Amino acid sequence: MGAVPDIEAKLTAIPPLVTEAVVREVMVSMIIRVFKNPDSLRTLSEGIDDRTESSTLDNSVSTGEMYVSESELALLRPLVIPEFGMYVLGLGG
Image (cartoon, rainbow, N blue to C red; front, side):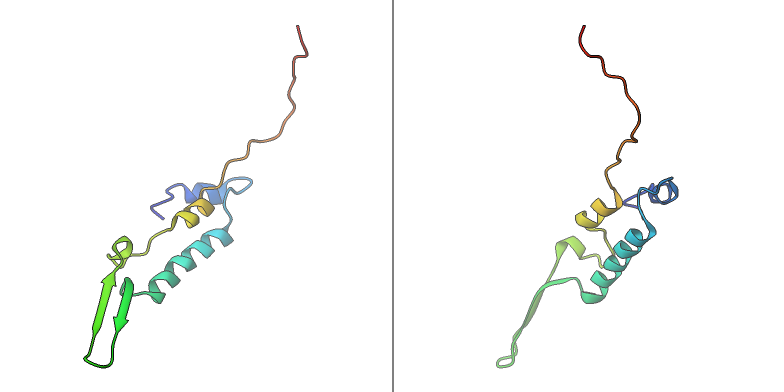
């Protein structure tokens, strides 16, 4: 995935920063989005009498290419939680 170039590193990190299930879910969502709307239409109006037919291409997906939505990117770019450890805190003085 070009939008998340370090996805392989996130998958193989110990512990993994992203799971294979999340990556699979995002990829399936991208594919379903294209299959649901292969012509990248945003609006479509059809008529029967006097034969009216019009459609509008969605500018964000007018290329017909798959894309990763912002919410999907958030799933693939989780916040890195710092490791827990022991710390010494100064108490005064």
